[in-house]
Image (tube, one colour):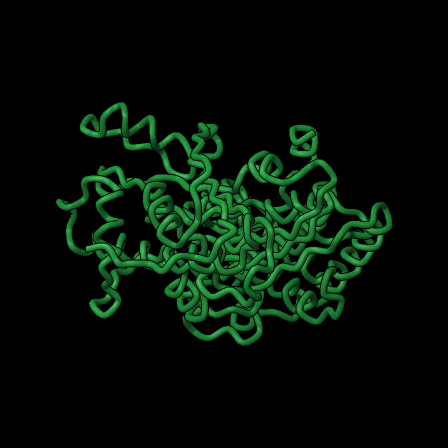
Length: 416
């Protein structure tokens, strides 16, 4: 059953290192027993869409505004005929508005000079004018679900691997680099096809089947706005240490939705997995114990060790929150990838195992899953010194399952 449903869960928008829908589906009850599901780092919403299609109640949080938008769109009941008709009207209005924008005015409303410079660098003059017209008419819409779908379509034209409406390649992998002097795709030419692509992929059609709604919110996994013991099952995938700066690519779309470069930089600076070092006042004894679980990293420069320490602090907070919101005997399924820093293998999965048990969760199982070539975000190390074992490990992800015991969480004693 899971494999059949997995084939119907087609993503509505590109997203780097997306969790495989089969993992979420296999982790969810399929015997008619309904549970409350949380993805506290929801990304594009794979867990949420899988939970909903099986009839479970689901809630998701993410700090990335584009991730929240994509997840909401993927999990929404859509009247496809109505959306297509209204999208055409929006497009017609944008075409009429297009001629009013000149080189000096073809920017989103409220864009500051830093954001305007960013837009000039990544978008040619024609697409700047067309995207400005589209962003103006979409921003005026009052129907929230329809507005999300159309923003998602606009973003889908930008977040591509090779041929989009920007001057960049590899935007969908969050590795944008400018390669074109003129965009290969015209925004007006691509907008309606982008809308239709989302409608074809959408698994939920209004009026077809009554399913629990999904709630998707901006929120931080380290500080969840949920009551204690309010969810039965957590399925989530933390960021890969030092691997993916999601906002690097996503900001090419988000600036058209009214975000400034400064705002997005501030969001990035506060994210789990941010490439910053732990400050001295954050140092705690458990960090050294966790570092020892992660491999031979003593030789790394202090900047990199500090970055790993910050990741440990963040994930300790996340796992503390997961323990708090889980019901007794509730489960947490955490999908994580190991990383490399300067050709050194860093076992993030060992850190998750150690921190989870430290927070009072019982380790149930550890499974390894080979990553398909088209799903690996970064290539494995290729230098001669990296070794066959290191290259093998970088081609897999680890699925860690915890359970919250029925007894009270034990008091944590810091390790020295």
